[in-house]
Image 1 (cartoon, rainbow, N blue to C red):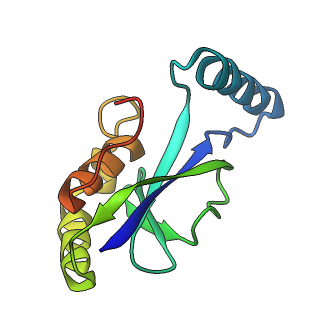
Image 2 (cartoon, one colour; image 1 turned 135 degrees about the horizontal axis):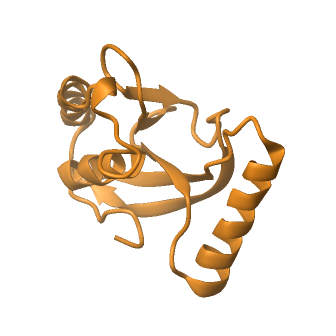
Image 3 (cartoon, helix red, strand yellow; image 1 turned 180 degrees about the horizontal axis):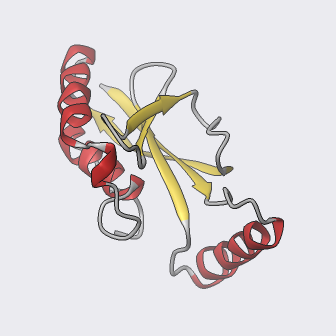
Length: 134
């Protein structure tokens, strides 16, 4: 069995520092104080030194990876252990190949098909719980 970890970031990729500060404040109020959620980016880590996520891209897959907790486009917030998968590393690699084919970058939609939807789909295939707040 292998731990499955969600890495969560505040979405602070605007060129405007004011906008980024506003997003951070919204997340602090809504998530930390009220417990309702916020504006977050998520990625999933299992087996290895990468976290996997999804984003817009004109051509090809929107699935990408980076070092855990190191996505340079956002501000790291926290890691959450979602459970342990019974999938072997080769099964996880097969799942990732399927997701890479299915999740094209041009299908990205900020509300209907985003990184959090991808993370939930990946977790479902791994047999662990989805992101908190779902």
